[in-house]
Image (cartoon, rainbow, N blue to C red; front, side, top):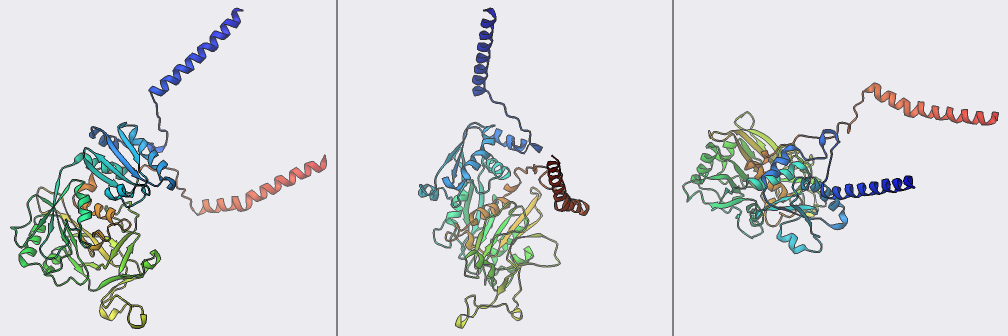
Length: 450
C-alpha cells in the first residue's frame, strides 16, 4: 500500500514540476545562438542602435499576402524584437489598401516603412546593415539643409509638374532633410549652413556669377549633386566641369539592352547591374533613365578620385544624331566618324577628395547624366526612388553610420584543387558504381549458394 501511495505521489510531483516549468517558460525565455559567427543573432552594433531608440518603433510592411514575403519579414524583425519588445510590426495588403500605399510613397512589394517619434524611413532591401542604418538615421535626426539651385529652368524641388522633383523631395523631407531654393545669381552665394547643393538639369545658361558661386562652393569643400541632360553643353557650366575634371559627351546615350526589359525606346537606359560603390552596395533593383548623357573623366588629373556609379551595356553608344529610327523605319547605328563611342559608357560618377575645409574629412560629388529618373513622372519606376535616396544618403554622409562585418557561414563554399576534383570525379563516377555493382554481385552469389 505504501509503495503504491509513494508511486502516485512521485507521479503527482512530476506533473506539478512539469506544470511549473511550463508556466515559467511563458514568463521567462531563453535563446541560444549556436550558429557560426552568431549570424542568427543581432550584431553588437545593431543592439547599440536599438538602445538609442527610446519609445516604440512602428514598422509597416506593404507585402502581398500570397507573395511569401510576410513570414520572411516577420522572422527577420523577430531578431530586433527580441532586444526591443516595443518594436511593432504591421502588415498592409497593397492590393486592398492602395491609397495608404500611395500616401506612404511605397512602390515596391514588401517595402518597409519605419516610424519613430514622427520621423520616417523607408527600406526596400531586407538585411541587417540597411535596417540598422535606417534606425540609426531615425535616432540621429537633425534637420539638414539642402540648397536647390533655381532661376535657370532647373527642376523645382517643390513643383508638381511632370519634370519637377516635388514627390521625391517631399519624401526626403520626411527623413529630416529641408529643401531650400537658392538663386545664385541674385543671392550672395550658397548658404553657409547648406549640407548639400543640387543643380538639377538647368535649361538656360547660368550667369557667370552663379557659376562662380558654385565653383567657390566646391573650393570650400562643399558637396554637390549635378544632374545634367543631353545637349546641355552650352549653359556656361564649363568652369564647373573643369573644376570636377568631368566631361559630358555629346549626343544621347542609347542602349539596345533595354529591349530585354520590354523597353522599346533605345534612349531609355535600363540599369540592372551597377559598378561596385558604397552607393550601390547590395542594390539589385532595376532603374530607368530616360534620355541620359554619357560622362567621361578627364585623364591626367589627380584632383578627384572618380568612381563609376552608373554604366550602360556593351550594346550602347552616344548617339549624336536623331534618336528615333530614320526614314523607312531604319534602325539607328553607331557612327564612329561622328565621335560616337561604343559602350559600356558611364553616365553616373561619384567623385571624392580630401576636403579643403579643415572641419570636414571627405568632399563628395555625384554627377549623373539624367535628372528624369527622379522626376515626378519616372520616380515610381523600379528602384529609381531607392537609388536617389542612396545618392543623397552618401552625399550627406549617412552611409557611414554602421558598418556591420560579414558573418556568413564558414562552410558555404567548398574550395577544391585539381587533385581534389579528380578524386571526387573518380569516386562518384567510377569507384562508387563499381562498389555498388560488387556489393550486388556478392549478395547474388551468396543467395545462389543457399
